Image 1: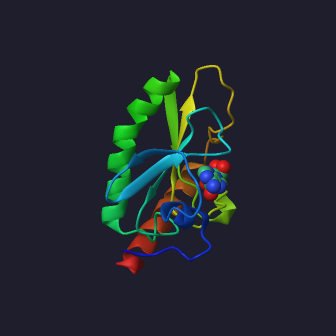
Image 2: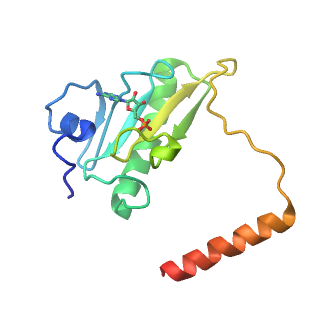
Length: 144
Ligand code: AMP
């Protein structure tokens, strides 16, 4: 079990030092409402054991978060009437992570909500894709 730094907002919520609107709670995970929601019912899921990002989390904590997401998504959809959800995890400040505690957003979505959450893309060159795939394969080999 890893403890978050003392001043970490989500660590403080877990320790009960800051208030939160809990929606789910088990041995390994905690879920609560985002207080600046992108839509009503916007929920955050965190592991009880601290990690900054997906890359440095323990596999068992990631599995526990996925299990909680599976349970919560239908409940959030039913409670909000949403047609779908985005499950988002911003990893690193460059990706928009503002709190140094791994978390998964569940953002309720409606067909006509115009939320700007969908990532835009453009067609890539096949050679560039092949080079990038090779570079990632090389990085994986160096890692193992
Ligand atoms: P991110 O930008 O991915 O790091 O997301 C952090 C989220 O935490 C944002 O959506 C904030 O609105 C939310 N947030 C910040 N402080 C609190 C808090 N005390 N309770 C609940 N949600 C919070």
